[in-house]
Image (cartoon, rainbow, N blue to C red; front, side, top):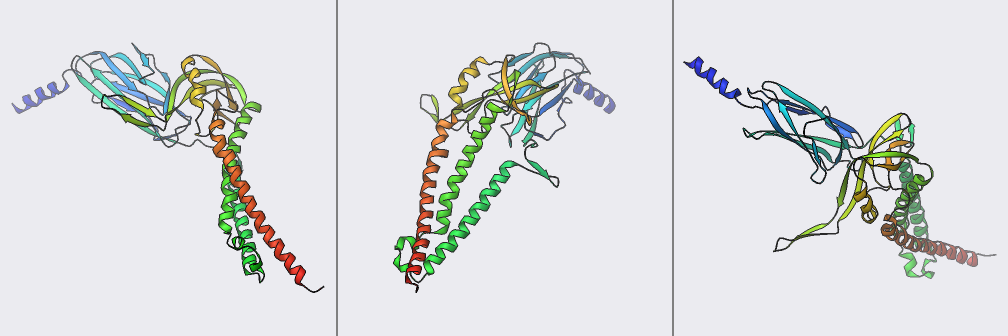
Length: 374
């Protein structure tokens, strides 16, 4: 009797549709930005009933782009909801396999490429879901020089030079001001001169220089897109909007407003670099300073849809670094004041303080020369 009960229980357990042994996997735990990742799906029906008309829904990550998927029955794509849906048949005791590719965005370093899949057989209300989350890391750099197996980026050289210059400036200022304060004739100088802080003057020079270096680096990169980057024809594979900042306010009537939001388009592109096919993402140049792109990119976001061929420009040294809008963008209008004019004003004031110190040293030298015997 017990054996019969166990047998009947086992039969009941496998009756109908059963997706519990299905798999959604990739071999990666982390991936460099700009890399195409393949996800494999095995829908295994362990039951004894044909799962015809099974709905498959893939929720695409906002940190990546949809590149490719196997031909599936009833395949549909919803760009607004970032979803791909299909309808498949899974035989009893059998399986249905397919795969799809996603591109990790170059602008999402530190975030996760999180993808969710849901399988539903509505007739028996059978559901199965799974999630994959892969951390996006920095892509290996090809810029700079290699010394002893270590790669030194040009930006590191500029940073090191800035730090060395700042240190030398501070040491020189401290020695000069200490000499002025300890000079026997220093009481002949204005009291304000003797109270000038060496560190404060150094910061008045170094901080504006740092801002100007950032602006100069942006401008140099934008200039390179006009002079040395190569042009190619790219096919748009996917697109998305990068939303930055903003505050959400709710009202009693249910209305919702968002203020201070910057929306910047970004595209997944496929283009040829010599004999090699490259898939990468981009829109315009610059670091994460995307202010100004909202106005400039609105037309492109509405017009440049999946499958369209547009011009792009890529860095010959790093072909994955690609833009579809080159040159000097609208960010200079917004950040030109903060990174350019304002630092120049502070730098002028800092050099003025340096001149006061130099004049104080010169005056004391003149006093010594005038008081010394001929």
